[in-house]
Image 1 (cartoon, rainbow, N blue to C red):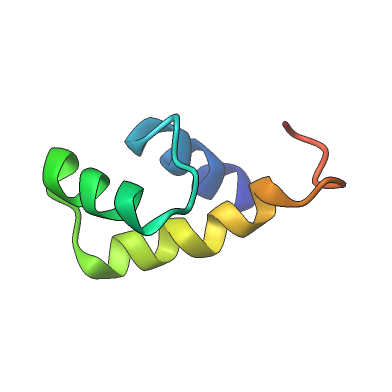
Image 2 (cartoon, rainbow, N blue to C red):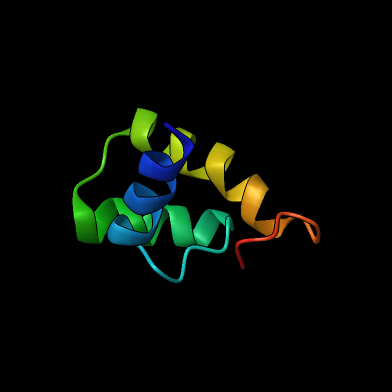
Length: 55
């Protein structure tokens, strides 16, 4: 489950940084729904943790 979420995150936008400007850019370029953007922001919290281990 987590691996699939990580794969989805990377496949949608490799350079996602969680900023509101990036949210708008992702929405425009990938035609993502607000729910998908919210999910990406939630998942991105994992990537910004120093001890996450996969980055």
